Amino acid sequence: MSTVNPRRWWALVVLAAAQFMVIMDTSIIGVALPEMQKDLGFSQGELQWVFNAYVIAFGGLLLLGGRLSDLIGARRIFSAGWVVLIAGSIVAAAAQTAWVEVVGRAVQGVGGALIAPSAMTLLMMLFAHDPKELGKAMALYGAAAPAGGTAGVFLGGVFTEWLSWPWIFVIYVPIGVATLAATRLLPAVGSRRGAVDVLGAAAVTAGLALAVFAIVRAPEAGWLSTGTVLQLVGAAALLVLFFVIQKTVREPLMPLGIWRVPRLGSANLAMALLGAAWIPMWYFLNLYLQQVLGYGAFASGAALLPMTGLLMIFMTAITARLLARFGAKPLIGAGLLVLAAGLFWLSAVEPTGTFVVDVLPASLVAALGMSLAYIPAMMAAMSGAPQEQAGLASGIVNTTYQVGSALGLAALTAVATSQGAGQLGNLPALTDGFSAAFIWAAAIAAAGGLITLLAMRSDKAAAAQQATAAPEGERAGV
Image (cartoon, rainbow, N blue to C red; front, top):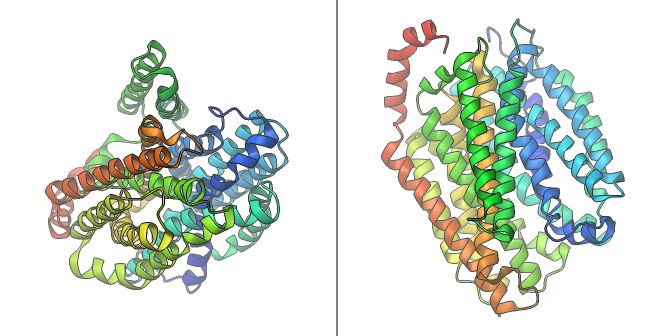
């Protein structure tokens, strides 16, 4: 940008609030699920789609949201996303049947898929002029994501216990309207000519949806059953088709040349594994608090507030400074390993445990790991992309985090169920199931940390690669 936007910090408040709300939408329904099941008639197997419908639509369409942001203009897509999210929230709140609820959640996911990449593009436009300001802005923006995920559990408990479950969706309507009114603070961006790869968007969304569906259904149908195998093969075929389309169409949804951007691949792998470990952690921790320790919805949400406080403080006050001093690679690697340590500690939970001994210290260690890794991984994925592809890079990194979260939760739910987590009322069996999930989540985080430390380029090496590859990238359209 040629000039510095004087309202950029107020604009950041709008963008961070949007990120907070979008991520909160994936977690706020957690403690409300039993009440929704009773009121709407979900079966035990169908209930998970209240969560999965949002995540699949969100993760599957983020690339399309990023592309539309680049073509139509980030502020326009940001505003359109909030209109769609408000509409989905109204449908979800007013639903009287299970299938309408799932539709409402999917529409919410579509709105989130438009909001997230356009918000990141706007942030880069506002703060790209100064690396120090960009680091601070990314710290505030990044802190909004895990805080939104944790706060969703708390607020879901508040609304469910003292009001009713539809309020977890009603709350998005006034907030959405206020956000739309505040979009005047955001920079206007003109549209540019280009085509939208609808076929590619359909292939990747269907492939991801089918993969999640297969993993979710596998514990019931059997991992080696004909249905599960065919679904996984079909998902793989659709994803292969997506890459074939990207290689052959004139204006692909995801130009494969973008993967020449330094550290984009390794940072996205780190984000996927981070999501696959972090989201199952808070999911099963909430179940342990309610189903084993006997906490109510509100108490369970309140028990997660210390994690939220640590995340917010560390990300806003410390992570940016550490990033400037040490670079992204060591922070991502160390953060994932610290998260793994916290998860391994959580795996020692007992049927007769207490919050202070079994939950609090381990959850704070895990939150410390998350706060170290999330922002540096996001920065590493975005830093090398040219401005005209900022929306695409944002869409990719958000997609990997959400898809990693969905696949990780589906797989670890299967692990937990096989170890006894489905035996409600049997506290030792429940605890064994949750413990197994924590152990496997720790293994995922540890693998991510080791891979990052071994495979990711340092900041200096990435900058040198970017400078060397710039002329070739320009010729290739990267």
